[in-house]
Length: 259
Image 1 (spheres, rainbow, N blue to C red):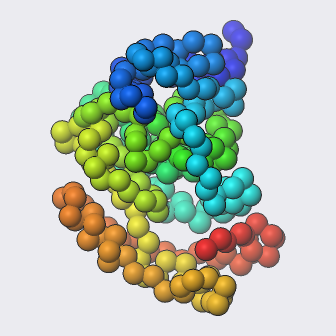
Image 2 (cartoon, rainbow, N blue to C red):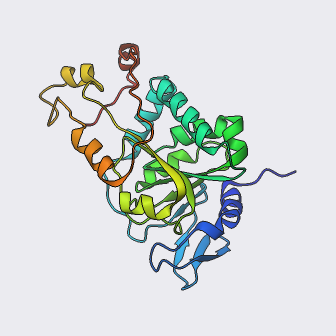
Image 3 (cartoon, helix red, strand yellow):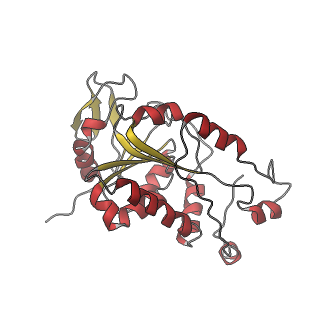
């Protein structure tokens, strides 16, 4: 059997999940998947990339996140620095998807797709979850499609999610901004948000080393936590702490921090 091209896999994923998608322009349903285009009821058209993602942003915004940054961060992930966090996310997703045969899981601000690919590699989660990754950066999404998987990747705006109301079971938001009005709109009853935020000690050794080259060398997550509490109920709270050696990584020229 011939191996499917990435755009062919994307086309299948879009058709499989067309019932939960909506047009980010007019908010109407997505109705047609044709060749390399996605069309809504009002014929707004969005392009599919041969790399395996769909661009659902009409006017792509410029971001500070370029290809070099995402490639550098991918090397940090490969080094295992975030493995402990990844394991915790897998455990939480496993817990909150165990009672349904089909779950819709979205990673907002997914960047190069590290965490979704970790979820996809878990057999139990893969068997009962449909995974979606969005990011405003085309460079990040383009890198996310490097792996062979059945994750639906799209360039999308966090403030205008391309999903119908009450369709998602889990939203994963890792070290990224949030839009709680959109989160509550697309989550179904009983849906949860997994929000990962840094605490005051996050990367403190690195911040100390480059003090003077960044705007702030200290951090407080108080405002982020308060905003979450103002919009959602906290049902689980865990502080994850561990140490890792980054200096071998840095000495090999693999570490690139942008503050």
